[in-house]
Length: 439
Image (cartoon, rainbow, N blue to C red; front, top):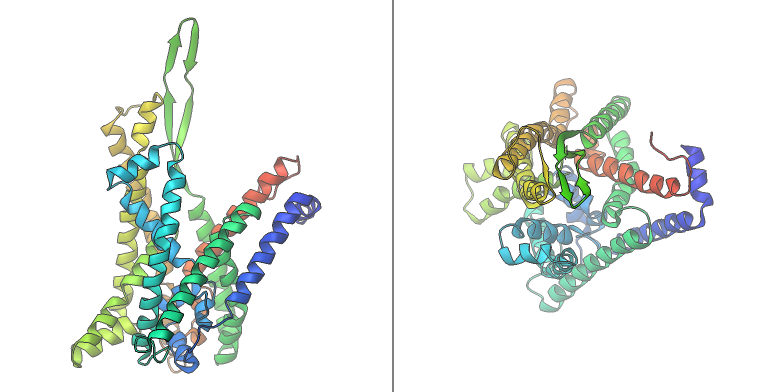
């Protein structure tokens, strides 16, 4: 593998791509340390400590660590991800969008519409993010936001511009560098935060050796399982019929349809984490009482069996829903029929689509349980810590929870980006007859 790295570095074009990627990531990290005007640092630090594995932690993850400083890049590329998800959901529902997607160059048009939609999504998220942070912290993160018109407009404009700048940097990596730019930006933020989070775990805990060993065990096991699930596919055999035109024979042969066990990545975790915080926010609109205190304690502080069970079920449910939508968008049965292919023993058309849907749901069950287990891993570790060291544990605190150094969502991103990037570098090397990275 090291020899392969040396070979890659010797190639001028590959070396330039790697250098460009590294330079852009450095620029992004500089931007992640430029704070928005008027941020209440003490309130932000208190909020981040209490919400390390919750919605704030997820947003910090997706922003590449920019939320920790509430920088101009605090929203990262999340508005663009949201816009992409919205279009993925709308295309099969709106005939006009579906027709555009099927036209020559239609995918590029949908991509352009996604960029346009990312701007209002960034504006809405900037307003929502400041208000939600203030609600969860119990005090304003940016004092004067909403009441001071000039300050409010400046914050919204700055955060929106920061998001579009981050998207542009990601596109630059995709075009001029190596790998998927948006994913690599998120990946770099996760990796950049890991050393400080691990240092906090070891210095703040009274059991540093135990936490270090637990962190290593969690990371190793999680990486092995993630790689296994990431590369897991169900291969459906496809046969193509022969066609005779004049004296020539076309077609024939066989192929496969590879259906991934986890086809949706960590998107269900993002959905679930975003929605599960709403009860704690909405309940603040009602008078104080035992019900409000219970909901705030469960969904605001993110602890207890009710919270983790709800989170698990939401992740599993969203995994099935989003996978069904993606399979319906691909319209595999129609493509097979158009190309003269069929699954042996299954009638073309509706029966084929039903068969594919049935197989997808069976393998998605494994992927959904995997994502659900990754999602509630901090809760499991918190329970173990409570049983072993009941006097040390503060529920949900990153200082006593080894699973929050690199969350399950973060590990999924890191492993996926590393595998995809290595494969792209391998392809560059194989074109030049070098031995690749991966066996």
